[in-house]
Image 1 (cartoon, rainbow, N blue to C red):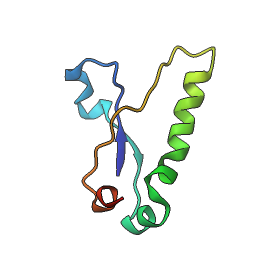
Image 2: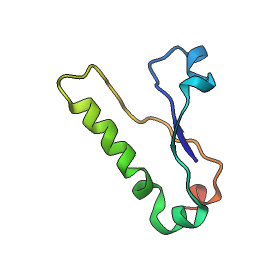
Image 3: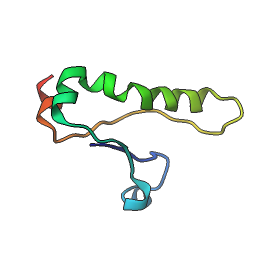
Image 4: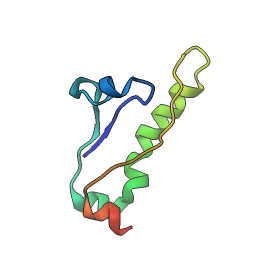
Length: 75
């Protein structure tokens, strides 16, 4: 499972469940086959699109990925 939260929220708010959003749920064999980069590609493309839209006031950056999945740590 992959989640994200907005980094520009205060730390107290950031850690609340209603501010943590699900990105993806997938089986370990899918992650092993395609890799984390490929699995996260659609989400990261959406973030880049939001950031590059001149009409939006969204500033985004991925800065930390945390996982307890064995596949993530073995690559």
